[in-house]
Every structure is written in structure tokens, then in C-alpha cells.
Length: 150
Picture (cartoon, rainbow, N blue to C red):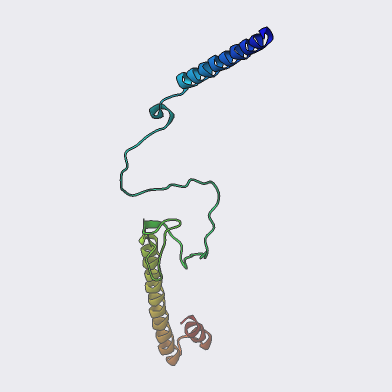
């Protein structure tokens, strides 16, 4: 019987130690656990638009690539579309500075006026040479040169 009592006493002490250990562990666990407000970020429910932004690096390639060129060159006065702008057929993309073209037109007009004056002079010389040839004051060669100069 003494043995049985000793055995029961040992079991009781072990059970008491286990109970104390479990209670200590539970107390430590409860003390180290943060409250819900500290463990989670809480927010009131709100209704509204949701915006999602995606940031990426890389190269975008167009589905359709169109090369735009001009038949004339010059200094750009005003730009109506920029690189990668969406444009439609017939839309004015830019305006060239007309100064160089006006100067070219004026130069060409001056050249035309000079050529007309030279032609008028050549016709007058031809007419004079014909009259002088008729009076036999100039040779046939002089008349031919006057006709050729016209």
C-alpha cells in the first residue's frame, strides 16, 4: 500500500507540474499575443471607384506603323501633332515657314521678268536686222545671228 500511495503521489505531482506548465504556457501566449487592432489594419467600408495602376518597363510596338513624310522641306512654323499622336487622314500636321518659299517665288518672278526683257530686246534686234538687211546695210550672217539670239 505504501507503494501505491507513493506511486499515486508521483502521478499527482506530475499532473500538477503538467497543469502548471500548461497554465504558464497559456498565460505567456495570451500575454505575447497582440490585440486585433494591432495585428490587423482595419478600415470602415466605403463605396467608390477603384483605380489600379500598373507600372512596367519595356518597349511598346504599334500594331500599325505608318511613316509620314513631306514632298517639300523647310523650317517648321507651327506643329499641330507630336510624336505618337493619333492623327486622321487629311489632318494638318504642321505648318512650314513660308519665308523661304516667298523668296524663291520672288527670285523666280525676277528671272521671268529678266527673260521677258531679254526676249523683247532680241525681237527688237531681229526686227532692226531684218530692216537693215532689206536695205542691204547688214550681211545675211548678222541677220541669222539676230534670229538665232531670239
